[in-house]
Length: 117
Image 1 (cartoon, helix red, strand yellow):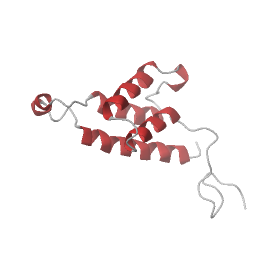
Image 2 (cartoon, rainbow, N blue to C red):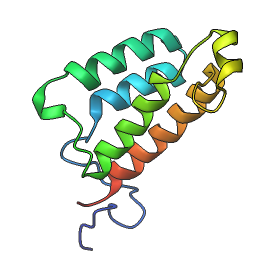
Image 3 (cartoon, rainbow, N blue to C red):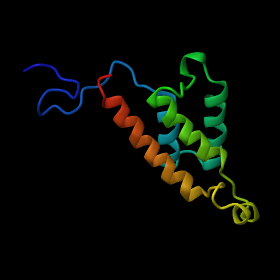
């Protein structure tokens, strides 16, 4: 049998040589699995997104960059202030919406890392 990007038949997906967005993936997993809270996620993601190593700066022309930017936008709109939420519910998001976005972003990153390109 030939090796394929998704592994040999019956073996499951082959692991990529490197994981794209690995730090973001681990950070989001920590949040989804309740190892960190939403404010810790927000601070750590912002730090990584805005001030991380140049090699990890998201390129909005690539799929990884768009995925990471979408999650950054959600975190940037997060607030617990009910008055602010009531004033502009289309812009600001709740923790429930952050969690939904985090799960979706994790799924997208996992799918992205399965692709051969």
